[in-house]
Image (cartoon, one colour):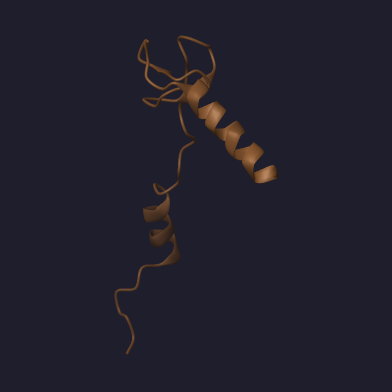
Length: 72
């Protein structure tokens, strides 16, 4: 069976022209001036919207302890 109303390559590609992805937008952290994704906690210092949200020192010590345990 033949598809009578088949879209041509031009019509198909014109429709798909809006499907391209944009690059992620970045913001500058107010605390440490590092780049981070908009509306996301800064993973460099743990601050978001002018206040401390994450305590990254605890996370860093856990990661170091795990690495030390794995190396044994």
